Amino acid sequence: MSSAIIDMGSNTIRLCVFDFRDGTIETVFSQKKAVGLAGYIRNRELEPDGILRVCEALKWFRNLALKFVQESDIHVFATAALREITNRTDALSAIHSETGLLPETLSGDEEAYLDFVGFTYGSKLSGGFLIDIGGASTELVRFSGGLPEKKISLPVGCLRLYSEYMSGPIISRQEKKSMLRKIRRLFDTFDWSGDRCFTLIGVGGTVRTALKLSMILFDADRSGVSFTAENVRVLRKMFENSSPGIFHALYKAAPDRALTIYPGLLILEEAVGRLDCAEICVSRRGVREGFYIDRVLKFHRDNLDCR
Image 1 (cartoon, rainbow, N blue to C red):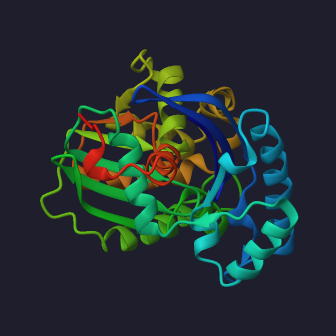
Image 2: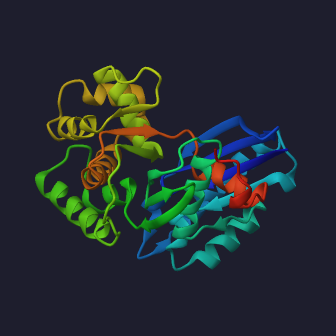
């Protein structure tokens, strides 16, 4: 059973074609475009140029998807880029009229839950803490016994922080101070009582980029799965000091993250500190897989074979 999932994130739009056979989910095809939707939001409205960028990308992805699946098997969802804007109805109407695709806008709670579903399907880990650092939001999920205990979506992400506080890739002391103030204020709204974990499960481009940088600069886990929490602090300081080699390594690892990796690291470091964790394990599955499982395959949580 093949389906195409298009994820409209605040920073990138990604197409994944999934196939489900014998209880296993396989990624048949994957492609992404850096669109930076969060940069087109002014006064909580998505600007006409932003809507145009969305339509161009969706038409391109639709044509790609049709090489693999039928029209009825193309599913689109949007996260923080669309759920927070005041002109969402008009924007969705324009997108639907231009592309023939109508994105489902996920609430923050739904996004956090689908992150959990995507990660835990097929995983032997029944408890832990998960973080998904996106362009405009960050999702936190504490789970135990294979079920989510606490979850929240916070309106802070790497692209949003860059757009609001930074003027370029070189970070000033005041920019860092302003970003940390916002991160900590929003993190304070989550109930961290009793939350400690050795390994933090990470989803999203920030943690994937941090892993790649750790592999290039620090000879991190060659299995490409995890890196130490200490690396987050070291990478953050290297960017602050414009250390030799850090931008060269970034351009090798993820050039599209040149402007957003530093604020993403600030968010990740704050989570690491509050959880007192020692390492970050990068999940290959997240909200897209969760959407496919929950919305397309229509599995109920109690029927998922998470162990």
